[in-house]
Amino acid sequence: MPLPDKAFRHLPHLRDRISDPATSFFRDLDMDMIDAQLRDLGAPDDWRRPCEAREVLRRDALRGREGQDIWVFAYGSLMWDPAVYFDELRRAHAPQHARCFCLWDEYARGTIDQPGLMAALDTGGGCTGYAFRIPAADVECETFHLCARELIGSAYLPEFVALTTDQGPVEALTFTADHSSENIVTDIPVETQARMIAISAGFLGTGLEYLENLARHLTEMEIDDPYITDLLRRVRAIRDETPA
Image (cartoon, rainbow, N blue to C red; front, side, top):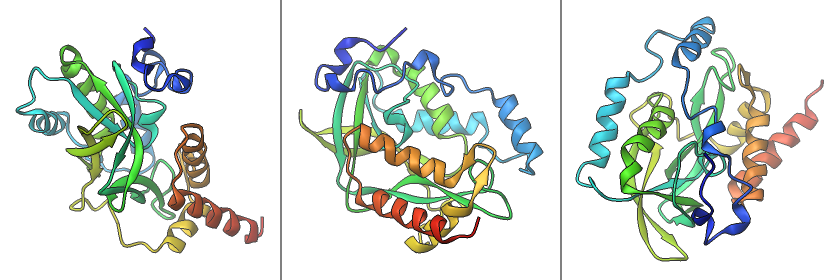
């Protein structure tokens, strides 16, 4: 079932830039397959958050909002591949947060010997993305799928943040960097970030591919993020100066 046309009434040009949730890999994750892949790569048995713990976080985050529509703030792949159904989409800005390559990655885009970095939402000077509204009747089902994806590891925490949109302010659920997690490292200089990304690769591909994909989608979604643009420039320069 594709997303309804009414969901794009504010942003009709994005209709063909957002994937159908029914076809998304992230809609129903095969955890047995993922566990087997990570085990083969040397990950410990407890690499991911137990389902019960994830559900506690989800329910705690939603407590007091029963029977209400829920907005979700998307700042990365959720923007173009949300894997959940929604009824309204808005361009949105989180004034107290920013994209940051602070998620330490030893498997997907890196290895234990050559870690990579992936993007997370951390505190900062502003982050533009998109907010989508899940109708109250669908919140239980859709947030279950959403949290199964975003809370699979220990790096993120669900929280509601204040957003500005062209249609007015909203408060939205999002997934922010958990500073208590060993997988979140926020003090890496940008040049070191670039060098890690330039040479890292894991079972999902290279760090460069991940960064290029993010930058390309931000451009397609009409979002300018100077940090991402600068980081990609640095990574490409390092790749160009590195002997083949």
